[in-house]
Image 1 (cartoon, one colour):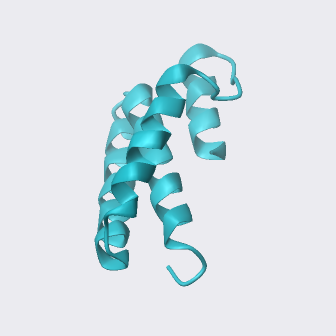
Image 2: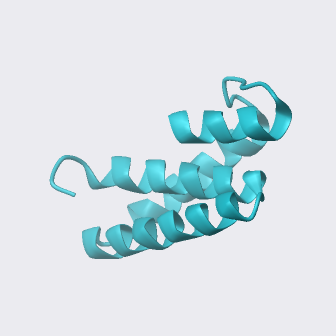
Length: 83
């Protein structure tokens, strides 16, 4: 979440609390999808999202980077301490 906030700061010059409807909707969608995944599938998806985050951030596409950061956050949260 910190990473997503910092990307917003870079994009807009300020960071907000990420309470916008797009963030809530995205988190809910990812969480619902993660519930149907095996631990290995969730881990693989989190790794892929992490790579997308880096590519998007490096390319200056902060919205896509924020989305990928939220995806990593939700998927790793769903994995729990064993992940």
